[in-house]
Image (cartoon, rainbow, N blue to C red):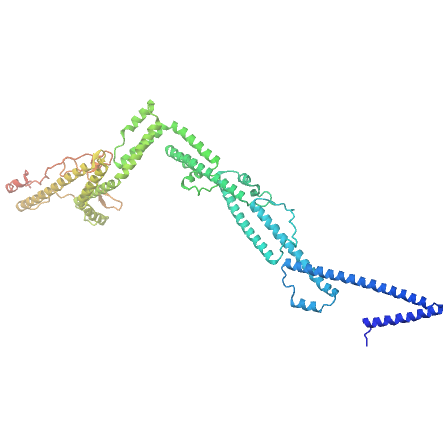
Length: 604
């Protein structure tokens, strides 16, 4: 049974209707009385008209089919082109192949390809925007690096399907290239920032206008216009490097200039004894002396104002120095004499105070030259003092030992030294140390002589101590010390003889108080009270013609020292006085030994 609405049903229905109408038309013709020939003619015309209508409809349907086929083909071609341009390689996926097999008509094909085409067109527009954005950034950054600026309204050429690859692979390549350029831009910006900071630091130290310095390289470095990006081209780098080198050269020149000025300042300050308050004013300038070139970073320390201020101070002090030159000469000469006095050398007599005053007053000598001559003598005296230091230290050690020896002698003569008084134990300890020190004196003197001779051999000159050769002083000291030791031995022998005579006298006349004993309540000779109430021996002063010879030390030759050894003592060999004894004693036995005249015994 045919389905209603099917093509066969529609054709049958149409045929039935046509047959019915044909029968009705023939009936009408019969009723009219048309001839068979007319009927045939009219039926033939009717068939021609029907064929014309069918033919027209067929042509229209054929044209519609061709248009549909062309449209489908065009869209499929566009889809293929877009997929190729976008890199969509899965054109014939399994689902699409099954769909194509099921599609029977052109309209269904058109309905299938149209959404795909629209989707690809949207992807294309989006991809074009991505490529355009990336390309715009690449061209902008490339322009910044190369030094060519692109206006913001510059239109990037449109990407077409024919000459552009818009695949994801190409997009990734563009993105990678953009990232590389962005990193290079970042590195260049960082490097430019380092250069600008260095220019800022140098301009601050030199007191120059930073904005003007960087603007001369490129206006964008000043950053007054926020819309203008910082120029990072090679030309900017070269300009900044040249500016930095120029500023460093200027810094080096100014540092040297300021150091020369500060050196002159220090010299004038030392000469003029300038107060610390005046020096503090230039503390920033003087700090340059102890810093290296790279360490000078304080703002304004090398400015022209700072240098001019220091130069003006040098000029002021120079003028003041000229008016006080005579006073400065006297002061420097006094310093020279102080150095020579401390080291026991003789200052140069050519610049003595009276001669210097006479030369300055007469105008025969420039005070500056005289001052320079004294400065040279001070330097020479300091060098000589340094070379004499080791021997001078040994001299001080020797003199200290001699003082301890004198103290020990006074201490040994004190009959109350062992009394249990305050401070007695302190003196006892000192005496023990002094005895050890005294035993070392001969070795100290011999070593000092050897050292002095070695010095004279090395320097090819005599070692003078207050204009007397030190070796002569030491040799005289050794001779005097030997004589003193011999005198002490002779005194001890005489004391033994005296004790023997006293013993004989007591056997004859009986015991009586010895006149040699001193009052125990008398203040010990040669002692002084110390802080704790005890008595401490003071340095002895032997009179001329005393019992023992005075030891000759360097202080004996120096008129500048204290009261010790102010004059040379003559060697005295006078014997000690004996206690008077009776003529009736057996003096004949000892007369030949001591050679002394004995007194008469007292009568009681």
